[in-house]
Length: 456
Image (tube, rainbow, N blue to C red):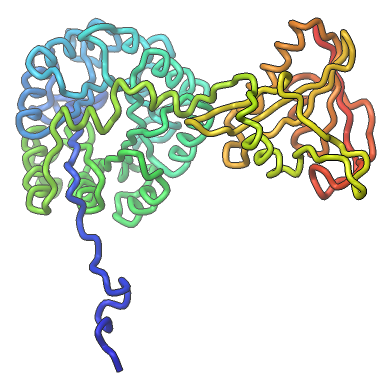
């Protein structure tokens, strides 16, 4: 018996991958809404302390800084000028450091105050801003992040070219990030902090971190943070799993939680540098971090925003393939199908959607006379359903028909979800049914539902 691979059959004779050798991004949360000097004397509070602390952790190996600002009384401050002074002061000596502004709703609830920091410009402008992806309970208070608030903040960041620092405390928040990305208001490749161990959120166990990481897209950069006693465990696990780390006094005031030994931000960073170096992972420089997070990369944003345009002849094959996925591709008249539902596609009346270089949607219409038209051939690639692509295509053809003087539109569809979509999104009304001429569209229905609407 050949026993050549008997001790390594699990890996097919190949060695395990081992620990990643990609450089480690260290993101430091210098302070927070709750941490203060009464809890730990090393928590920085005023402009000079924050600037000095930033210099220390950057010199020690940090490349990202998550920043909170404070007023003259030491209370958390939302005013952009307070953040601006901090950012300008840090950038005077460390221009490549990645500076992240908090938009936390823990203390300041309304959109105007949470988003005010996003209006800064020049050297005062943040590179990134925090975006907590849902509401949660902390041990003594709730952090409310309603869907409309999250989307408003996300859109403002998009408008300002500020990359979101996503914050997820459970799997539902990760799922919501995917929803935002499908809507085109997150970039293709994101950065996300996974925060574990806070009472009311995901426990601080390695198996829980592995569960969250397993669901993240391959191109995303992620960092693990452990709250309180779980900080070192989560940081160490992230290093071995190939992720990055979030560390700092906002999440944990103690260097040793058992003895309650107060931590300093620089000591926490130095410990992670030692661990990472021992495990063969170098420390990412600010320049490397900026590149990996795609700061200033407009293509990363554009990749989740479809481009709607008129169809050209060279798009024909891709359009037919897409329509074929829904059994809606036009067919020529034949002995078996003497009267097809659709025998051609009118190119000049057809719109397409291109996303990241791929054709993902199509929508057409047919002019019946000077004031009447019929919409047809609306299809979206199944992998991109729910991204708003169908809506944008339909709006494009409605606008064009309106410009041509069309007053009345009808359409036919066989899918209940599409019927509801036309009625609820656009105000169509059902006016009848038509039997199908042959097997076209959804195989489970033998008729078309007719919908109509008046354009005003």
